[in-house]
Image (cartoon, rainbow, N blue to C red; front, side):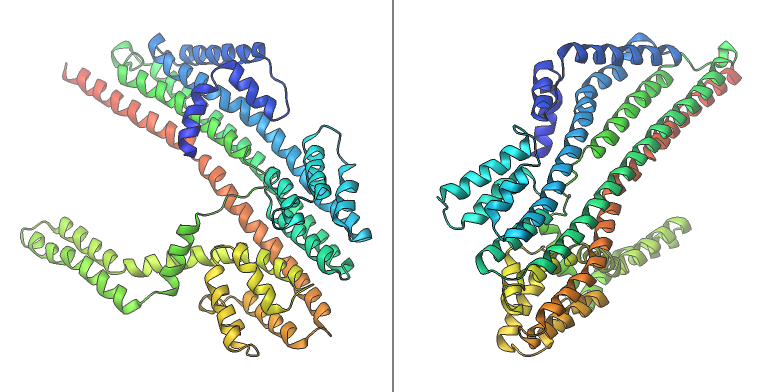
Length: 500
């Protein structure tokens, strides 16, 4: 559905009115006249490139058309990036202010009204908070008044930390309790999150600059080769060759698409993280937790056997290299189950390291008003997919043995992660201590978790930057392909002249 919508958007955005309407939704103005200037600039750039690379007019059409089709996306990316930056600042200030305001009164309605004064009347955050306030004042909830009111804000600003803060505020409003220490920890967690988001965007901008420089350098390299071809005697020249013209036209068009992709990556949401598909995560999880080495080894042997068998007659017929290739493929297939397991294991460990600290923070917030077992049960419906199966096992284990440490220590034990083992021991200690020393232990738990949260944010940053860093090498690939095609053409022309 997303891909279909994107394809439709490419053509609908070519209409200046549609493009203008989309930019208006971001809160910025854009004139049709300015759009026409951009189109003229795109066409002029394509013509200039055509002249520099000695392209015939019909080969200039491809980069010109690609440039015009990419223009709406490039324009929107610029405005969307400014919009996402503003949205991040709004939600970051909101989280900080509502925590400070709630700290003084323990009243959600008062905290919302106080926070609303930070924002300009008519602005998106101001009007969103106003809708939440009005919903609470009407008191016409379906099931949960504060949950439904907060969901109005969360729909506009989909951020996991915002939901965690709202859940905590709701819990204190309904159950009471001393919130000073917890709010201080939430403010510390919010600061870690905000700092890492800013750092990610700086890294993305640096990556886009590198990609732009990479495109520029490869174009200069292509121009140097072009100058060499132009300096050759007419009988050896490949400038007018159709293959050379076509590959140069394609090369220029691909560079435009690469630049478009880099800008699109930069304009992604600052507050809403991309997540791996839940079905895919659970498939990897089962691959690790239900792994049967003997069964998988037998399966690999069955797959590898035909390759080893085929290698024997191939060798008999004297095709040594083909026989070696078949044997190598057999060895690979013989070990494919180990490679598959290792891949799945690494993916799940990375996912756990990213998701566990957030879950632990939610646990710490729930522990303000609930015991450990109840808190764990309450996290399950909203828990990350990678944690949910083991959380359900832990709850079942605690029902059978409520005073045993075993259900805690069995949680994700197959992955042998020391940070998780340490946290589980702490949760067991809190469950055993009762209300006496629980609050101080929860504080220690969250303080330890802050380092894990920082590490998790950095892992997410690395994951987000992977796409940008991969794009950096694409211009080098395109110029290499262009150079290879041109060299093949030159060799064919040269050999043809030698025969004459």
